[in-house]
Length: 315
Image (cartoon, rainbow, N blue to C red; front, side, top):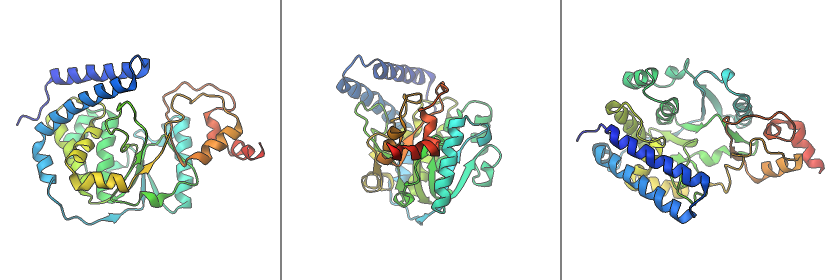
């Protein structure tokens, strides 16, 4: 079967994603309608990809004998080098480094100068990325699955914020991620996983499946079908029970009620005791660097201010 996805289909799905974003941001429809719409468009993409890449799916539907060795690595990624990153990213990375040192984890920050020290990617993938046919975030998707397949360990986005209480032992499974509420089904995962925090074992068939699926996609295509392509591949793995993926999600993930608390509140005014309460409520939050920082006190930068953290104890 022809694996290239035609431009008309790509334009169609981009338009349906735009509608999904409008419904989400304007809140003109109840959650039930948004949920039905999102699920319908996602199922269309799943069917399209499943049909075109049926050979890969079939290959991984049989049990594969692989070793299951857990790695001690924590992988972060900033292509240009962390020293060029926005301050909020550098602050998150500094916190992660402290927690890794406390837990004797080997932190490795992947960038354009060192990624070849850890993985060997096909020249086709590298060339498409360098020729701007592949977005950086999707190149990072391919990297994360190859890194974990080859070395094991935990991948975290550079904008993840973890507290000193973060327990790495909960990530020591063939597959680990977090679950969170997703009432509108906007996320392709339906809240069952999040690709900004993933861990797996060395030679995991699931991570190999996703990696090979993505490589094969880019072998036949020069345009991205959907921003959440990697989540669609994981959803295909879930639907087809690749490497017992549904069972691993049920047993080896952590539910977080509000990991996105700070998104949309990056400049919110908060008192020190509020920051303390937030830190006590959870050991993990997803932040973003895509906001216009407003100088001042009692804002998100206080998450990284030890004096403010400690002052919360006095209120």
